[in-house]
Image (cartoon, rainbow, N blue to C red; front, side, top):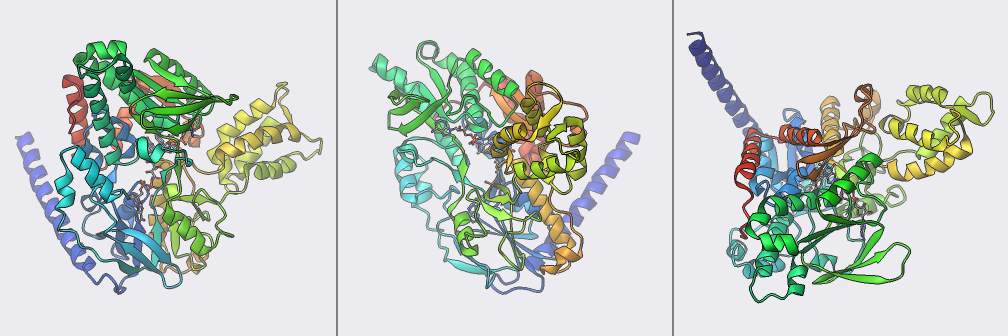
Length: 591
Ligand code: FAD
Ligand code: NAI
């Protein structure tokens, strides 16, 4: 009986809650359908983007106080950490995307468009919706039509698109948040755009999946020569950052767990995966132990890792490489090339920097902001920038440390006790937030500089080590973790201030943004992952957590991304995908 009563209470309670939410949504919807061009009764906040920075912001902005509008060419949120899994079919496409409308509800007005220009004086953005293509990336539509025709499938979706008619439009804002992310960096390497695959959007992952299947089916054609078969089954990944490493790992899983059953001879004799990295180790942003573990693990997985090697050109059937310290160029025949050498600013990011003035916006990595994430050089403070497209202005670490060193060296001996220095750093983190974020790195730098292990350091020795550290740690990493914390911070900040005027920031004693690093994770294949706690929050630091690798890290990786999935729908799909892959393997058909 008790159980029955509990069930009844749950169902009735759930019903009321559902009714209440529907009513609230209905009210929100009524509020939001005001005119697009004229400012309504509430101040309007326009958010550019629908990714990791924008979604937490949209979810937490107070829509009773503001009219919230999201403008983005992508009408869904993409769970980027699972893209490597999508590219080999471990996880299906629909699992990693969630409609922006269902995520933020009708209280946020969404417009599918590319912002192409902004005018901070008249507080207006100009948007182009026709460019927002059906597959959500700035691809050349003609190229898509051509490739779709060749692939004999989706072309009808594009050619028969009579439902598309969207004029350019302008929209006013009271506050603008730029969260437009970044794009792939090819470093102008010849042939990359034409012949290599990127792994940044969901369409990229689908194309790679299709290309892998294509390579195996082609290699399986009876008349194929040995040489051509070997070329077709040579997969090259350029860039040993987390994207390249995770993709190579997923590809090795696909070969070992699935393709091996369907193409046993090809897998045994001809398949080769090569990861090419310009530096002397992979995952260079992580602890050295993790890089070493990953390299060894890859060797066991038959992934060849070429370190100290630059890719100079990508051709249709080969990549041209150069080893460090050698002038000679070598060609490697291959079929599928995945290019993952990092990111750069989007054209709109650079346009915004130009409009504001490159003198203030001197950082080429992204839009420079102050510690409240307001864009530098916009006097009324009405534009914010977050995520991959933004960089918070930080004084150089070397300068910060030099100031602290001089303060700590009260006896002017020019040498310093590490313990004494650490105490000072702890006291100063409010002033120099970078010290907090990277306190572990600083300690490591100290240990490296203190070669004679005396526990005392000279400023000269420190300087040398810090110059190296500075290059690595000046900007916050371009990660989902940073973007989502920034999005949440701007939402809280905007919800707190009564007006969107410049004075509000001083009057309301707002706290500047402080990033809380929770550790870095990467999947390295064969049910193993790596986890680095360097620079994590002080609370985690207390446990003195060491880098983790292997199966336990893989469980953490899986549970972390499972909980990170935004909705019950995608959580369910992800659980089913993992179970399906485990029980029945991946679907290797090309579509
Ligand atoms: P995005 O999430 O890229 O969102 C940008 C949004 O802006 C998009 O919706 C886009 O359509 C929109 N947009 C673009 N141009 C315009 C325009 N002109 N007008 C309006 N809107 C526009 N980070 C981690 O922390 N952990 C991971 O495990 C991890 N794995 C990753 C795996 C891969 C394969 C990749 C590619 C990245 C991964 N990252 C990871 C990095 C992470 O995805 C990015 O740092 C994060 O997406 C940045 O968030 P963002 O909001 O700045 O940009
Ligand atoms: P990255 O910048 O982290 O790494 C790119 C690598 O490519 C570098 O190691 C670089 O030395 C190498 N490289 C550059 N040019 C080369 C060339 N011509 N030949 C050979 N190697 C070359 O880039 P990645 O992996 O694309 O990541 C982009 C961003 O997304 C990063 O900020 C990263 O932190 C984030 N990310 C985080 C993940 C995680 O936390 N698990 C997963 C994927 C991405």
